[in-house]
Length: 304
Image (cartoon, rainbow, N blue to C red; front, side, top):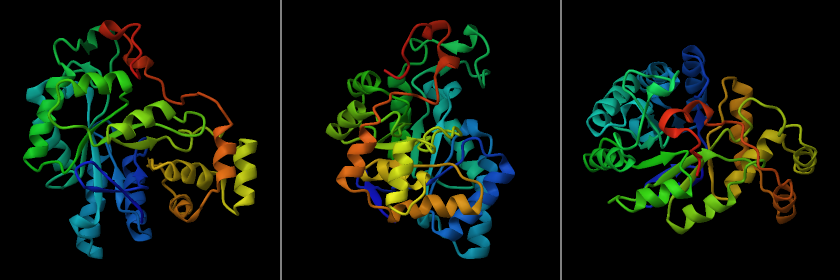
């Protein structure tokens, strides 16, 4: 396994298993398989509605296979309806209870927006909470306290652009260790990556294979490079991000895909391959923030 060293010296495995869109039974089976295959990094979130299954998989692996807590790196994310400072610690404790863990390795703020506590997903503008009532700075300060208490070994953000990161830096005591964003050859995030490198913030790429879309897997440039390297298109997409120093967390629920993704660690792209992929030159998101761009966030570029 290869690692990315975070700005607090924590080592984050460069590839992990994403659990977004996995049904609980799928998530349980995927985690058990992944552990057997050598995965150590698992990406979760309060909103994914499968943390209990993931936690049970950890517990069963500890009981049956000798897994130790220190063998795994577990990430989870604070949902938007727990952004008020007083709600952050209880929300983290609920995650830990579901995951059957005493601490997280990485605790992320999922989005730079806030929702009312009773609104799991926003249906109307009234479900959104203006940042004046739940400032990102206050949410982050509460996360900093949990980091100091050891409830999270590292803290960071997700879906933050350069503007959001710059604003956070004006008030934060602790710099985010990670920013998790969508990143792949169709959305290289080069400017954001440069900003994060300058500020010692590691990047993790979600949806590195296209979030269920096959368009990148069928891209002729990717296919040609895959054939040249005796690899699959998925492995090329993952290797490309990892060679840029970006961690990847592809979702998989079948053993063959878990194996295929992990084997991307063995793919080495040469300079010509990297340049060819860079020349694809698209700027396409598979995940938008439209659902949040209502009420106080109307007309706002949440990814800025």
